Structure formats: structure tokens, C-alpha cells
Image 1 (spheres, rainbow, N blue to C red):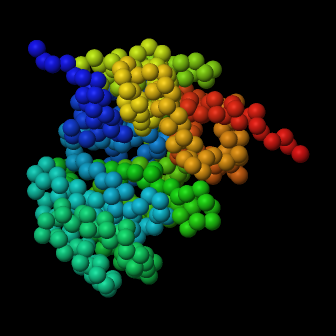
Image 2: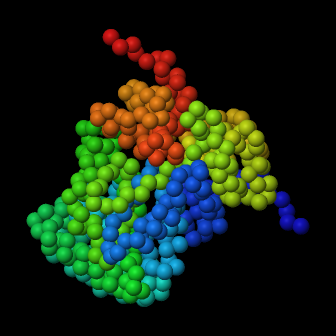
Image 3: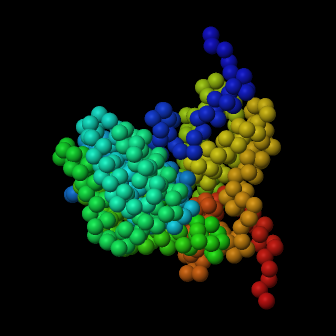
Length: 445
């Protein structure tokens, strides 16, 4: 008979499974739990399958939704389903670009090309043993022509294309000289820059399409691009937001890659008239009247149960009302569900976790959502109060920046079943904070 885990061993085993992403890595597929349309609206994976199957040739689809809602998990689930009859590749653009900086089309396109080549190289035999050395060499020669001292050496590891990925990452992120030279090359001769980059893409997608069906590439994490709250900073929220909007408004020819259907994961605020858009919502944990939504809570409980050590299951850590509090206060966001559960594990000196351990976990997560040590501005608290009063609230033009910033932080969540396909809610962790803020609101002169 197997020895039972000690409390410490149980906590260690549970912590190891609480990834911030829901079952997307190879070793985590055993943790995947399907999410029903009742608790999150339309099945994103099925919607994407329909879009791809009904689209002829290359195309672009945008995937939007609040951060922490599980977009990456759904995109990779879509990829696993898609692999049955067509080629699928995935790249995380933050491997090449810093999400705290404004986005520029030259670096974005270069990062996409690098991610595509690297993805094929890593996939090996699954992708027809395509030789990726030639594309890397084309990229190296292009960079060399920019004549930026030292940067061309970043591509000298091309003998093994997979190894070249990290060195391209360094060049794109850490060399201002290289970034400037890359941007200058595009601005001076956009057509030539585009032809160089898309030529590399086409040399690969022609091989990928040998199955007769258009391959699919996911470019993930553009929704992670956000600046800081200081509007005077070169990396301010407004500048980063504007850069994203500009790229998708003005660079259709660069973002529409030849011979491939591209899926870009982008922020909810991004509007793009020339691309399909599909949205993912949060798992509904509350009704509009504030009552617990039991189907959504059951869904989240099943997700945690799947990750809990078999020795005692989830009930060994959380039982009854404490579990209910964690589920509701996740807001229906995978990121916050796993963060709360992790904090409870850390704080639980004995099992099951005490009320104090759950309270401390909620306090830490609430602090993160509110923006850390700088806190949340009075105007932002007023906006949250307006949303708490009206789930169909439409922000004024002068509130858009604060609205989008708060949604990026996770302070605002979107649940299915509203008149616009969703309704808004203040994150459950913040409801008491928002209510208290009303007591100290300054009277209008």
C-alpha cells in the first residue's frame, strides 16, 4: 500500500501543477477540462475551426478577450484539433519583443518570421523535415546589409536553427541601434522590406501547404503589450495602445502572410476592419444580481480538482465555504484561479487551509489587481463603481484609457449572456473595495 503524502509533500505536489496557463504544455494536457458554452458563451475552439475551414487561402483572424481568460489554452487546444488535417504552428511574440514597449511593424514582422522558422525547426519530422537553414541564412544576410556593428553576429549560430532563436531575441529586444536600423530599413523602402520578409515566409508555407490545406500560424501574446500608467513616459499605456492600433490599421499587407491563415491574440480594445474577430469571455461565476452562478463554480472546481494531488484531492486543501470563496473570487479567470490556489497553498501551515490562509491569499491577489504599490486612481475607482451599478456600462471617450487599463489589470471582467454578447462586472475581489470607496468619495463642489 502506497504511503500517504505528508501535508508538506501534498502542498509541494499541488504547487507544481498550478501553472498560470490551463493545461497547454505537453506535460499538462492531462489537466485539461473542457469549458461549456453555458458558463463562457460560444466555444472559441469550435468557432476558430469553422473560420479556418470556411476560409480559402491565406487570411487573418484576431482573437480577443480579457487577460487570464484562457486564450492561450484555447488556441493550443484548437491547434491540437486542427493538426488532424492541416499544419499548425505557434509562436509567442514576447519571446522576441518586450510587451512594455510600443510595437513597431518592422520588429513585429521580423519577430513573426523568426518565430515561424524556429517553430518549424523545433517541430522536426512533423513538418516534412523542412530545411530551415536557408531561411535563417536569408534573414542573416538581410540583417548584415543593415550594417549595424556586432548585431549580424547574432545570426551566426545558424548551423542549428533552433539555437538561433535566443540570439534573434537578444537582437530584437536589447540593441537600440539594431531596432533603429530595422525601422529605418522599413520606412525607407517598405516594399523591399516586405518582399524580403514575406519571401522567407512563402518559401516555408509553400512546403507546409503540400498537404493541400492552408497551414495555420498562431501569433500569441500581443494582448500582453501594455505600457505603464505614466502618460508622460515613452512607454506609456497610450503610446503602446496607439502603436498596436497603428500596426493593425496601416500594415495589412505585412500582417497578411502568404500561404498561411494567421491568428493574432490581441487586446479587447483593438478594432480591425479587414480581419475576422473572435472573442473569448471569462467563466461566469456570478449572476448580474450578485448571486453565485453554480454551473460556473462547478466548472472551476473541476479544473482545480484535476490538478490536486490524488491523496486527499482538492478537499484536503479547501473545503466548503472556503473553496466557494476561492472560486468566486477568481472572477472566472484562470490566471487568478491558479494564483489564489497557489497563495492558499503557500499560506496553509496546516491542512485544510484556514480562513486566515484564504483571506491572506485574497489580499495578495487583490493588491496585484489594484496596481501594486501605486494603487488605483480616484477616477478609476469611480469608473469601477459605475460598472458595478450598470453591467451594460459604456465608457465615455475620456474614460476609455482608464477602462482599457483596468481591464488589462483584470479589474473588469466580461461574462456571457449580456445584450452585447457579454456583460461587465467588477472583479469579485474588488467589490468590497469599490463599495468602500464610495464612502470616501469627495463631494462635487
